[in-house]
Length: 144
Image 1 (tube, rainbow, N blue to C red):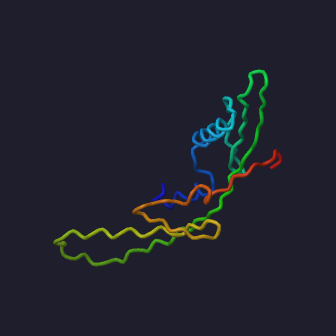
Image 2: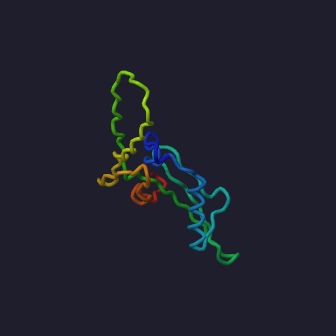
Image 3: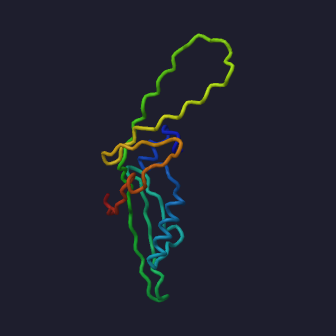
């Protein structure tokens, strides 16, 4: 996906991600904090804002446990404007080449801006900014 900028729009809007991976990360975070997510306790939010609703239960004493729920929304911090692809010039067919032409080196992918900082992706060693550069996640109330 990283080398196909045409697919970046939904990803950068926080719409193209694996729900199961996000819920697995939430469960791992809950475990590190002495809690667990009961079955069905992690659900993706759809609509105007993308995010998740998560319910956790403490894993303390069997007779005394607490349950809490929260909603978190994903807010994009980046935008992507695909550069224009140049139209190749039409040329007259020439004689058959005697040596194969070398592939030109791929151009860097530009057009990604996160919090006002322009990023350039090297197709030979593709690496996007970290999730913290791409998105903000914040807790919301029930009325949001």
